Image 1: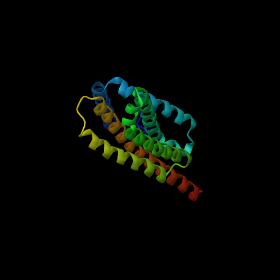
Image 2: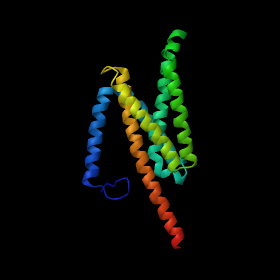
Image 3: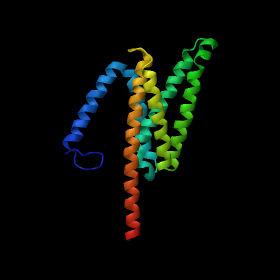
Image 4: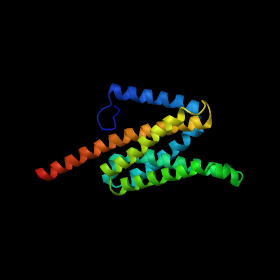
Length: 192
């Protein structure tokens, strides 16, 4: 019998959510292209594996949130490298400068939040990363309304939006797990 993320037997709603997520993911991957999906998924898988091995036990409840956001960071860095490599001259690079500055600020905020999450997992780190995702979600939704369908920009925004939603879901889920774990530890200490 399969189990849910909480270790309980998987319910019909767990199976339905898995089915909907899988079908939705396949449809989105078909629209944006497998390369646009596989790069962040590879980073998420890598950071999930590394996090499972190296994150302290106190940070393990936030493993999925860590992996998704570190994967997003990796994807952003690859995208930035491609953007810089594609600039054939200094004029083209200068044209990309606002985007590079915005990405640089994103990298600083995300990296800082991830380091905070690793060193001191808790409400502060969750709020830092959650606020980042909320701001990016709002900005990307606005940007989505201004780009043409079926363009690279539109497809990248779709992936960014999905990763932001996933990150927020995993942040909330991980924060709730962390609170329950800390409450149980406090009860154990107080009781015995």
